[in-house]
Length: 227
Image 1 (cartoon, rainbow, N blue to C red):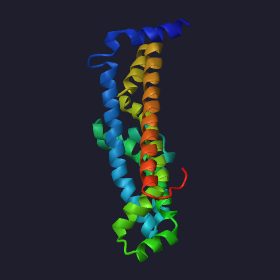
Image 2 (image 1 turned 120 degrees about the vertical axis):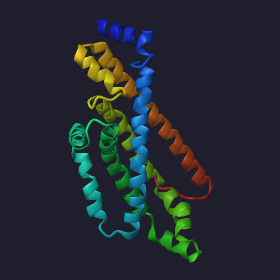
Image 3 (image 1 turned 90 degrees about the horizontal axis):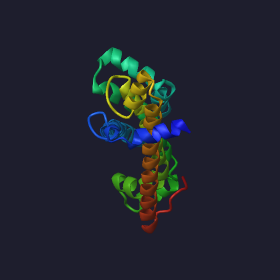
Image 4 (image 1 turned 180 degrees about the vertical axis):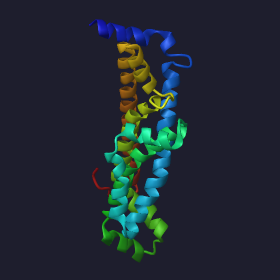
């Protein structure tokens, strides 16, 4: 009970919310790391997944290579990046991007690859160009699976972006690292709760976006496969 009161007290103090080391500043830093890493990962994984699904040559090998990132511990990737690059912001971003690519790439490849070939043939017979077929047919049908990979990467990133603090940078991980250094349990629990809340809110927003997109495509007459 005392611990619960201590955590509530930690959240109630204005000094823990404002300033250079406050929750709002650390939250903004955390969101920056996550957003930048996810944008880079999507920029790599989405077009590569579509390319592999359409040409298939070496697809399994390429996906297998990228999936090595899932097997490597996030802290190990950061330490390796520090050894190669040094203590730079890019060190953390590279580690986070490495961990984000596999779920997005795999789900994009599988989603596009599983679109019924008879539907593709019908689209071609209607005179659709390759780009039109992708936008009007393949993307709507594959969207649930692709977005599932995006959501998985996002939630994983929110949790693992705390490693930025290990490399000496900001983010919500500072509350965990600094709390451990000071033996400040309320700060550790408070930081963990903020990370969890961010993950829950992000998942909720993703759920809303997915429902809106599915509703839009259903209204346009595209039959979407279930997630």
